[in-house]
Amino acid sequence: MTHDSLLTYRDRFPITQRSNYLINNSLGAMPKAARQSVLRFLDEWDTRGVRAWGDGWWALQEQLADQIAIVLGAAKGSVSMHQNIAVAQEMILSCFRFDGPRNKVVYADRNFPSDQYIYEARAAHGARLVRVPAASDGISTDGEQIAAAIDDQTLIVAIDHVMFRSSAIVDIAPIVQKARKHGAFVVLDVFHSAGIVPLDAKALGVHAIVGGALKWLCGGPGNCFLYVHPEEVQRLQPSFTGWAAHKQPFAFSPAGQDYRDDGGRFATGTPNVPALYSGKEGVATIVEVGVAAIRAKSQRQTKLLIELAQSAGLAIKSPLDGARRGGHVALDVPNGYAVCQSLSAREIVVDFRPDAGLRVAPHFYNTDDEVVAVVRSIRESLDSRDYERFLSQAKKPG
Image (cartoon, rainbow, N blue to C red):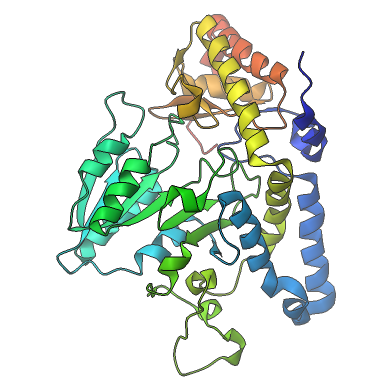
């Protein structure tokens, strides 16, 4: 068996010692160091009180943002931190008006639903919505099809880099080319690619990137981000703002907002310090390991997963071509939700999503044996009908 050097990081993630944890596209495993980091926050709050802001709390949001910028292949100072993806999306949309002739929002119906809700809410402000259907394969978004919907009246183009259901990677090159030709602004959601697929913000050519550390970056809840291309920063003025976006926030000026000239321009109010403390260790580990190395292992393990699943008679709802596939594989399994619960009872953690099936997502700390075990256990659950004891359960998050 080939030596897997990335397994040297496995002990940093305690859940791997208790479970076959294969749902890293939903919630990445918690680093052991995150516990001590949060305890440090509590100790500082307890012993330093309000002085902790000057000791480092205030600067932490920029420090974590700059770590994420490394993952994005973006410039230092170009990323701001936000509570969740909805806030990041709302922030960038607040920079635009939709009451003029250029008011179209082009987006894909395979995008994550929460994103769609935010675009669609702009209809009340005059936005004309252009929702592009799924590609002919039913599991992905066709970049050329999105590009064809862009014209001189298009204001915003919103696209997910990796489809949350199928793991299909969208070819954004034709989208960006057409959008720039017509003066449209491209927002790319990398929630399902950051940390598992190498990114280069400059090469991608998009105007803004949104995403979060919850999944492949192992940063837990509350650590989402917004990147804005440095060339776009000065011309954008968000109407959704707060004191942290002011050049001199501690001047508490009554003279009105004086926006910062960097990514901090898109900050809001008081930063979520506990989330930043819990999230920074995972992001630092991903930077240390390197996304290129993580991607190479991911492609190998998802290929193995697909081969095993096909041999076990399980249908695949993800691209078979590794270059077109993100970090997870969707398996179209009968009674998928109940099978998911059956696996959980065996401490094999995957998830179920409607119109996707079971999503299985190994990360750099997972072993090949764990990939083998999940396919074997799915087959056993189906053949033994063990899943039937979970059919009556109400569906819950997770």
